[in-house]
Image (cartoon, rainbow, N blue to C red; front, side, top):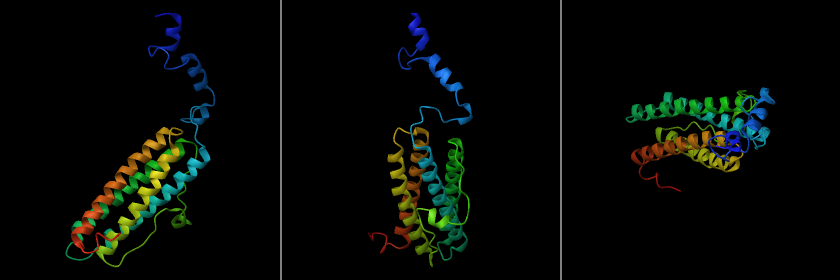
Length: 193
């Protein structure tokens, strides 16, 4: 290994200069995880994530209401699905809030304006089938908006993009679960487009 290879490390050219990376890492250490390699518009990403956080909180609240309000012959099984989704949406909200702080922002938990910041709506639904349909609509909204976020982030914020891809995959699972419940409980309306 010549001196140039030692400087670059075992990767042989992957990193331009390990010493330079080390020097840059010592600069602006108050920025934590945000290094010069972070090329996204941080303020825009924080705003987008705060809207996603509001979306997740609204989903938690809607699923919790549906859990407690579920009635009828199939209510127990459907209520358990609502509770599981509520808990998973809370995990999403926590992950998003944590990422906001990692990139130097403040998560917006202010209840004032929560519904207007959310991509999905808070619709209560009158019956078990209505509740499932409203939750499915909300999941479809999240899928569309989170897909847009993933595309927007691209290679500019890989960590946030990956987190949103993981959350998106879970939202797709939720939509699939709800579509199956809807097809079981109301087969005449599950095919409506």
